[in-house]
Image 1 (tube, rainbow, N blue to C red):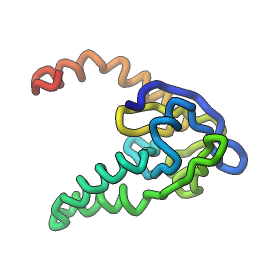
Image 2: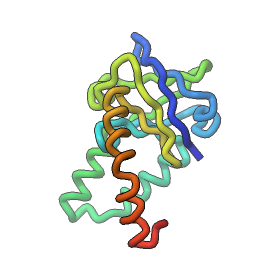
Image 3: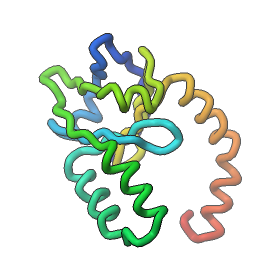
Image 4: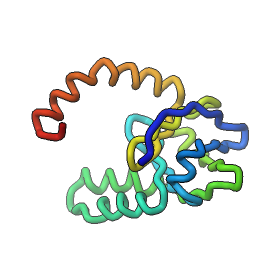
Length: 144
């Protein structure tokens, strides 16, 4: 399971070093794609196949489904993890997430989210204030 929060530097060649714990879990090849809330999602190959299959099973007759599939799948890139544990973040994904030199890698169970450090700080502050309300809503539907 991918958990934890790490701040790392994106170097001048757009390479991002992955924490050892994440490298072990993700493997030698990852898929990076556009995520929600202006971050990137990074999946190991196995988890990406599960996610992509779920997306493929949705009806393409619905506009929202087509749009979301286009958003996730057309933005996906297979990336090799190099010998020292770095991945290359393509320009279009770097721009999408407004990544600067400092980024946050957040483990979220089946994926790693890659955030602009300032955006993560703002978002995290917001969800920390809302955690009680979110837990209550999840409890109402039996998720907690």
